[in-house]
Length: 74
Image (tube, rainbow, N blue to C red):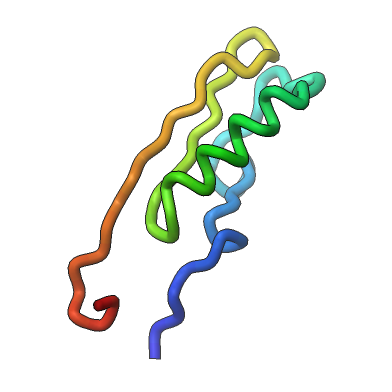
């Protein structure tokens, strides 16, 4: 039986993704954290949230929304 993904399964570190941060983020503001949380809620179980940094700062948040069309998820 295949498990359905949960929010915890969606978390992936830079090392696990095969890349290492050149310059790590120094901090995230509460505004950034709220925006990341909102993005995670918006994408659902099968989506992705990508944090794009530049010069050690968070520059963009990308949301990739996916939907399952298998009969098991209806």
